[in-house]
Length: 464
Ligand code: AMP
Ligand code: GLY
Image 1 (spheres, rainbow, N blue to C red):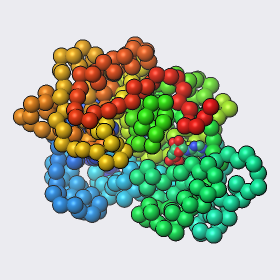
Image 2: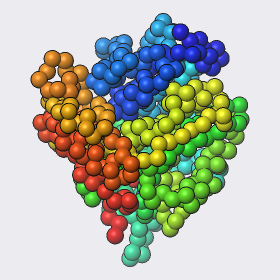
Image 3: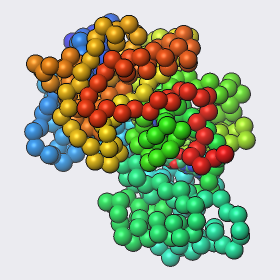
Image 4: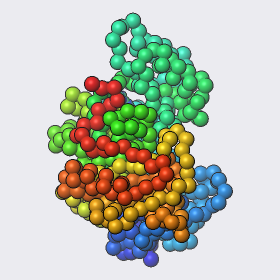
């Protein structure tokens, strides 16, 4: 129904394409479908949640395992054929592979940065050099492109001193969450450097390493809308959120893709917010503008708070998962209109507003995750009990299972199976509702953390 010209959205009722298949994408599709501006949402490939969502439909274009470029070309043909007015990209991999550049070159409107700016996430070394160039507050670091140099730097970090803070070793390149190791001692540091650089265990990532000072403190995720082009623009931050990355309660166990999120973060005070804007957000905006990026999309600032100051640990060039599942139910403004404002560079006029309460969004995983786990379990849902909590169920690793006995119409198909997001008047209320909602869901081997949002701080593992 709508028409795009110069990648601007000039339409009243849109067809929107959401790229991705996780819980974040279900939340995006759910929220977009609610907008009066949206006629229909197509999710490519989507999951069982987007398949069953009102106003949404999944798009499955290629049934083989095609190269990323082939998928992108097929999506462009699809978007043109179906008259898609706007595309919103969930994950980083398609962005790093140039999806936004390709769509824009084809005259299609898309929310997401181009490949060049996506290096802020895809390359730790590039991100670090950007932070240094633009005076963005971050941990001190050294980038090494050769094995001998990295080993020497690791040895000199641990040196002869008796009490030495850990060394953070970050692999350059997309490493699927496996590219950061916090080495407590010289032996671990040397083994990690060898594994990454010599043995190449990260499948292409890790040829270059960033060796970084270890910081201690709680972490906060700040996501924001970005509309920068032609050397000027704006970054509009959202309310703060917090992921819980460790698998088990009390931040114990292995790192995962995220075991649950809350928004807002009670300990991210107005002072910290102001410090973040001065030391990180504003110079980032300056950097994006000076580099001449066409950055119309979302950005994610991974912050660590130490001694009352915000440090930037990482950029992601997209929204967080599961932070998005906590954030979107809290957003009062129309999300589709926000996407249009990003694309059309009208963010300064956009009125972004939030509901007053809080959201707690724990993730239910399959037993064994992040190791091996079983798939294909029917997901039972007691709809009446669930509805009483007011919570929303976002599917992640879950496919549609029509006709099953289960009640949710879903069966598990991944490690992180679903997120339950509950809105409450405050953090405690949201938390209570979320956990009551989870009691109404069941599948074989279902497990979840019981402490999402239980304390206001989420210090790093190993901190006192
Ligand atoms: P990154 O992908 O760079 O955010 O790193 C992944 C995780 O490693 C972060 O969320 C932190 O928990 C931890 N981390 C990264 N850099 C540091 C650092 N300099 N000090 C302490 N922890 C860190
Ligand atoms: N929750 C962190 C991420 O999306 O990378």
